[in-house]
Image (cartoon, rainbow, N blue to C red; front, side):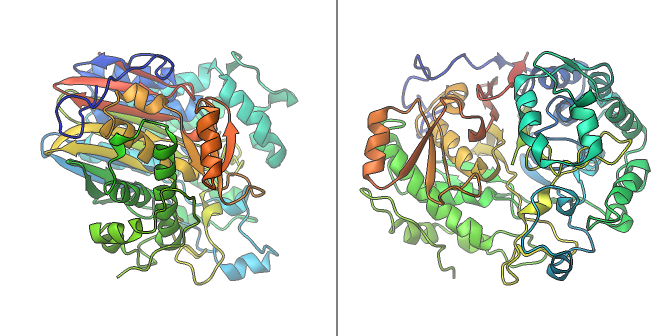
Length: 544
């Protein structure tokens, strides 16, 4: 169970038939929750062999890069929050790459583009994930990278049974890509793989094996040279963009919520949108509502809209733009914004005046070390570009740049784009309570908010908090209405109809809508770890 608002007994029973498909696995020593069982297993085996949570996270991520290639990979970016038990500190690692030195609006115009491309070489920014792995190991790890990547090398070279989600993603993205290497790898011989087929990626196995011996492989080595050559004619990166890449350690951002401290990843990520939402919700007695009732969902939706309006206006690379984090997270600012709420009517909200596809996973131990990681290629299979001989799918994170010259996220050289990627850690009185991460592109901040309020307001056990019906507000496809609310059909027709009467544009989706994020979390209470894995995906939580 999760603690209630007073830190004591839960506000309600933690499991109700029809909401949680399974109990959260428990352990005392360690727990790994990720979106593929083989990845969680690699993490647990690393921990049982004497590795720490950072070692286990890299082993987990390495396998995810092989088994969930539509969600993540070594050609993408990484952010994480690490609660270090020895010091009580929460550390933030920004592992995002920057745009190429040839980027800019003039260059877009020269190429005849009026908007940012969505796939292809023009969307590729520097992949930061492997440098982030090295930085994590140098500061907190205990095992060599070569050892940690052995499970990933095995599954890439010898193969693994491919899942239905990956097979569907291959078929969905195939019409969008024209890269011959991507098609050779993922549609071998022109035949789409079927669920359960043994899927091999020998070029990726070679790359992972070499990476274990040469951590700079993607920036000054063979793979870096292959990336630069592939993008030479139609991309924006040049060799020096890769060679000069560096990740950064920094401080997370946080807010207080009903006695908890909630940490999120700072700009250029959208973590601030979750914190804004919580600040807004703190002015209401959320727990007085029935979960997923009309009143509850209306309140969450309206606070989400307010938070996202500010996100869209202000969040960008803080190295290139002023991002007023302190003003946005001020409690009095939330109080002013909260005044716009109409309990009976849905509204569109402008920003306030101030004074994808992804994977997320969590590794924790019983001593209070918690690492929450988010790692992505952005859209499914990223750019759809694979430099020959590498097996590495490159991200399309550059597609999120803005072409408005007055916007802080405007396309420019050597600049990190706005990132949907976020990770979360929750503490109470300095002690760790939860690590949370989920995929879901633009929806990640609103999914964090929904899961956090389920756990912190209603006292739900983490598995139920993850499995409860979710909504996603806003556009998914270019043809979508901007006010669309995708709401899982497990919410009753009566509630959906009542929300429509309040002015919400409800778009019912499947009971387990995959684009509503695959969330993974670990909670820690009284020395017992509980892991939650989302039934919307292939994930598993494992502990001992």
